[in-house]
Image (cartoon, rainbow, N blue to C red; front, side):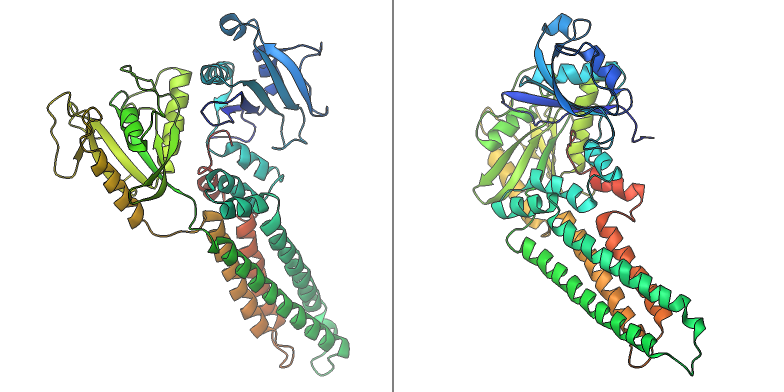
Length: 461
């Protein structure tokens, strides 16, 4: 069972060419881990302790650990020592030269020294649990990563900055104020008799009705704004993921489908350690993201780097909209993949060995080009058959606002000021309205649902 105090580590920058890379670490025991990973250059007392201010610390890889293999590589450690940082706990971001093997080595060393690899979205989840961001902003992190148009990016950035969330939080605050006043009126109702209802009580009822009407208009405005946000987009680009055992030609197929050598190819198991992605478009294919994964082993995974690669691959499979299940021509058994996701079966490297290909599978060879266009056509058909969708955050907000609007309508019918309606029933409906808004902001969600929401995020976010 995971805990918000666990010491976790992950690469925070995507794979690929770049001048700098970042490894992110947080949790109990961060100071001791940093002292063993890095030697600070200008602080005799080592890295900060809780309560000290955030700062950038110049350092190098420690002699006793990574320094033996990599030498005194200069790094910079952006450090939040106390609970006032972005995730409500000590947090460090080690800024390294942009070398994929070096990043993997730092992550592996942190795991040897007591950390575990972070799950997808775990850093963002901790920020949410610490109250640094609400759920609308947390889901906007995923929206920024997945945005494919300026409209989608602008909407996600607005949510990260609190735009949509601010309107919903303001709505919730006014709902709570009205609920408090209605329940206060109920508490003091026994001080009057039915035959002697004071004028002030009638005025209060009319005030409640006017405020309730205003809240219903505000909910309608928020719902309309959510509709406008998705009017210019069809949601995040679909993810088509190549899945299979190690060293069966997935990366060669990936390069052939994309049309350029994006993935490293070698006749050696484990060449792909991280996932790679590229835009797949044209020739009738709706723009989608093609993802190449490290091979999924059938048995136990040995070593921290291989375990990290396996965890990252399985996280990508969980995010897939379409799976291309690959097997080598010499292997009669296709890989196991989630049954709920559309699947395309592919047999690779049929030029190397006689292949047993059933009617549903596509035989391919990157050497002679056999089957490549057939795979592209199958991907196009699978992506086109997927139901249209808005972003998950927008859908959840829209459902929450619809539930809130229904509860407010019921409250208005129960608390009609002219006919002297039942404000106790109205108060119950107002509680329902607050609960619907809390579902949107995350205040009322259980841990299981939070796990599902944050698991869609990338590892390291």
